[in-house]
Image 1: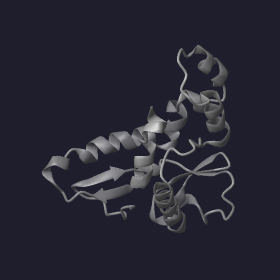
Image 2: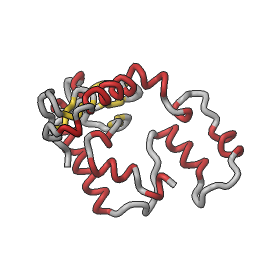
Image 3: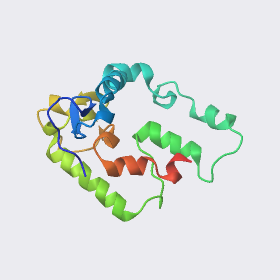
Length: 166
């Protein structure tokens, strides 16, 4: 379930320019300041300076894997190369079909309503905000929705799947 954007105001959880209403509770009084600092860290201009080692062009995956002692019971080298090449890694059988269907429904909702959300989108290597786009591409080849865990509870849960995090 993706929360609808709410107007900015006291007691709202800020994520980029998107706000989630947490009811104005006293215990969230510091959330605005904390999230503003976080927003500054994760904006596109900061991304290129703070990106993970694997996202750098000179990342040496083979040397990294060779430097590890114990390897997981899947082909880590192949998974890292897939991430570098495709921007996605598939762990077969790691999550239920129901969770995948829920995630695809969230993606569909975001694509159909892309102007209602501040979605970081990569289109063939170019970083954009969904609000900067005139239309969402019909052909999704080379399109990546970034930071999906901000908008989709299913994406957040999937990103914490033990087969992925261990």
